[in-house]
Image (cartoon, rainbow, N blue to C red; front, top):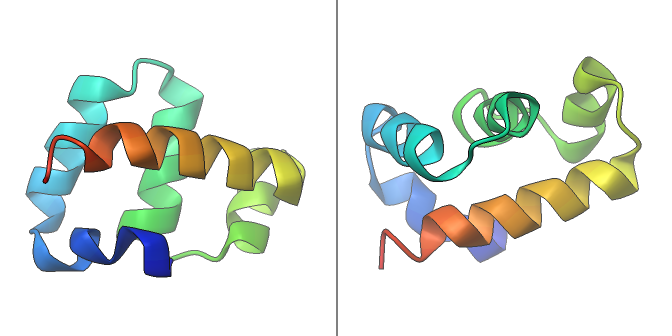
Length: 72
């Protein structure tokens, strides 16, 4: 996602650590891993985790922003 371009510049291990540290809901963490680390689209992430695409985008943007503020 263009909004989270900074995620491209850090190692996956560091991104995983930040997601683990700041996203406390296990299902939401898994969704962020799927999207940012595994590279799944919003649609594929939604299908994998049994959420609607709209819910998936909301979760990824909300918690992606939370993680992003610790990168900047």
